[in-house]
Amino acid sequence: MKDLLIFNDVKIPIKVAITEEEHYSGLMFLKKTSSMIFPYIKPEVHKFWMKNTLLPLDIIFCHKGSIISIEKGIPLSENFIGPNAPTDLVVELPTGSAGKLGMRPGDKINIKYSWETRYKLFLQTLHIFG
Image (cartoon, rainbow, N blue to C red; front, side, top):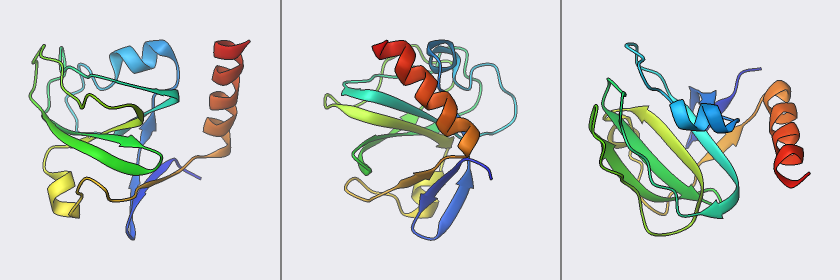
């Protein structure tokens, strides 16, 4: 099973950033469009930038399964973007995806993790709280 973002009936294969290094590098330097999520154990204000990210992105900030904010990521920008509200999940999709899917603040999204990813997230939780 692959890791999937599910919005309405649409299933989108995603990469999952688990470690601090994966959270830092995200989709930097990639020349091919991809989708990635950044789950956080503890809800906090998270801001993202596009430094070294070559492709434009929709950056979707979520809390408790609901979309809080949808921002436009501009390639190579070093400006931090995101809401001033706690989030526990950030989603990066190819630019225009949020609009094509009809995503709006308040909408629900769901993540279906593979067993391998669940295990890695569990280990990361132990690392953070252990």
